[in-house]
Amino acid sequence: MEDNQEIQPVPMIFAEDSITFGLNENSFKDFMVGLLGKPEQIEGYVEGAFEVNVTNLQDLYSKIDNRVIRQHDALLLEFKAELFFDDDSSIMFNTIGNLISHQETRSVVCTGFNFTWSYLVTFSKGKPPERQEISVFANTDYGKKRKKHRSLILSLLSNTDLEVPKVNYSIRCTEKTWGSDLTEIIKAALKANIVRGSFLLNFRSSLIQVSITLFYFIWMLVWFNIVDKVKAVQGRELLNLDGFLGNSVDNSIKLDRLLVMARENLFPSNSYFMPTMVISFIVVGLSYSHSHSSGIQS
Image (cartoon, rainbow, N blue to C red; front, side, top):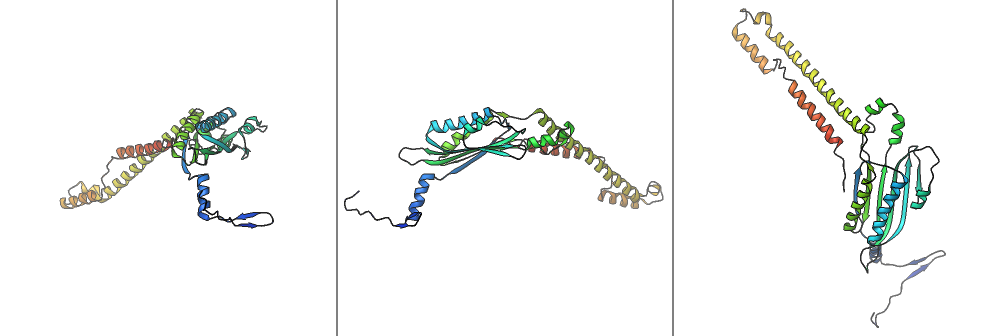
């Protein structure tokens, strides 16, 4: 600092329970940006049902926390864990230790969880630490639906729980490379404890696809058959077969009637099988692609 540089006094306003400092708005914004950074958001999910138990939750926590702490100079500001149950209740924990030591006394099923980490991470020496936030969450109504559909037949035919379960993640980070690297860690940790899909779920999905296809196939056959019969009736009425096949009707009149039938498409075609097959294959194709369209995103 130069000897002749004058330090400007900072205005202060005193109140009974506070002191207010005058501060330039732009300077304050620069200070907050330096502290919090300019976060970007990375979101995605891993398809499958996560087995919610103490071992898997502790493993997920350890892999993420160890990576963040070891990779950079990082300080854990806050950790929150929330568990959801099939009776619409939830429990919040502020440390992983509290979650591990928790003993559930109720007869409930854990249907989901929500983990959130907040860190101050220093990416470069000489620069202030920046806030990063990580969330991993999954919630499902599987427990409730299982109670509602105790019958195997009802469970097979019900389409209320056909949605493929998944575990979501969200990373708010100021360093994109750091966030991308952490994304891979989260995916690997989730995949290690993911159930890709039960036999019952896959069988039910296939059964419904086949049933829908069969229904459309039969419906289209019936529809085209009805249309052909209507055409045949209209054609017979137009031709008036008793006189049409004899010599009592002039050939020019017969030709005119045949042209009318051709123009009105009144000849029974009996060609409804191929259109029905094509439409049925389109239906099952769309159904299959819809059920397999979800996957891992980043």
